[in-house]
Amino acid sequence: MWFFVMLRGKRYSTSLAYDATQQQDIYAILSILKGTKEIIAKRVTEGR
Image (tube, rainbow, N blue to C red; front, side, top):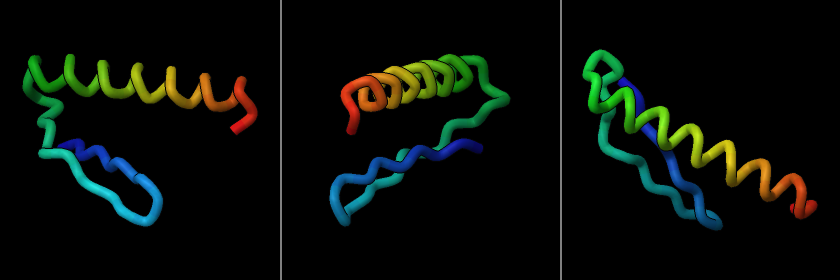
């Protein structure tokens, strides 16, 4: 099971569970990870 956490200031929220044994969830997990990678790369290049 995969869960994703969003942190904004001192507040956070957790996603619903993603089951890596289900094909549809695997694609969702990969999409979320790719999006996270892009956000991190953008912040690194901006110096944040």
